[in-house]
Image 1: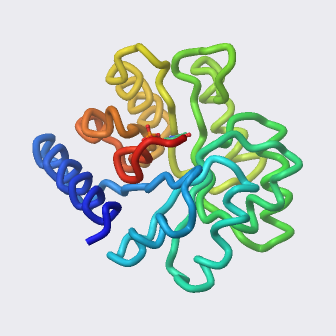
Image 2: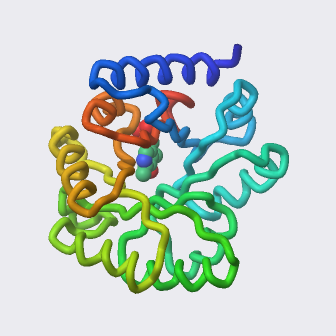
Length: 221
Ligand SMILES: *Cc1c(COP(=O)(O)O)cnc(C)c1O
């Protein structure tokens, strides 16, 4: 087995254990394998053993890597997990199956326009800046309910859930619990939270999607 396949088995085992400990079904947690900075040969290690769900944080990098892989594996599901500029909305809609980083009105409007144009509606997560960090993307918690409503009612985006990246050095569980509360309040069923260092905690707190990079592919250079 490849190193990637080994790591995948281990991460899947831990997700299943964390889910069971929380009285949840392992199948209710989707592992998004974050392949940013790694070449297509590393993605193939996971495709070879049946994994199909991947995440990338930059449109251009994903465009270089994934069209060929998607042609070969039509059931490959690609998630955009990084900040999106409005002028890349068209490219993002064309390539990605899920967009996890919707975080402002102008972007919501641009995505809606491009989805209409393409006749393709990738599922959307609203990214929340739960730590209210200056430099970080995401809607602020205080603005969230109005923003979710605008995405749904004004822009008609297919909003399925919320996503967050907790501040470095803070207890992630507090942010995961906050995100779960905000999702519930807005009637959103899906929660994208948890990365290599904290995905088991996220699963215990209700994550439906964990985004795991280095625990699968090793450190990024
Ligand atoms: C890179 C990245 C991840 C994966 O991080 P790891 O710590 O390597 O698991 C998850 N989410 C986002 C938004 C990322 O940019």
